[in-house]
Length: 101
Image (tube, rainbow, N blue to C red; front, side, top):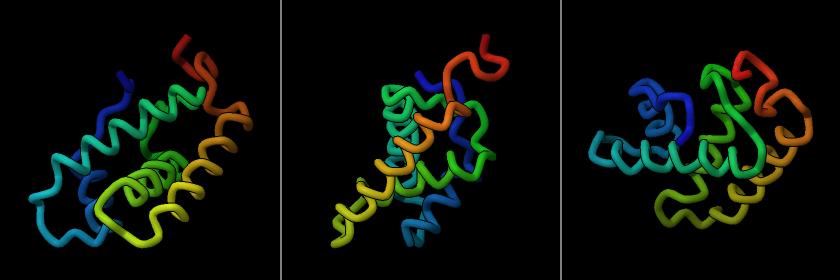
């Protein structure tokens, strides 16, 4: 399981990004955010701080690609994949690269 916690503030940020007006979708949004972090780990990207702007952007793009029936789903999936791959290659998000050991 991903090591960082999805906070209510992040869920609120994601809800606004997804243009969801009420809190009824918060459980689904949180589940998507958790799935994103696990998907990033599969790709070799380990997020240790969700204050990192690239990490937040990756979660936003993942959620936008997988939430609802937006006509631009493929565009958001491609943007997420490109960001994920760049993060995996840059070396800043590797396991053991920080205080993880």
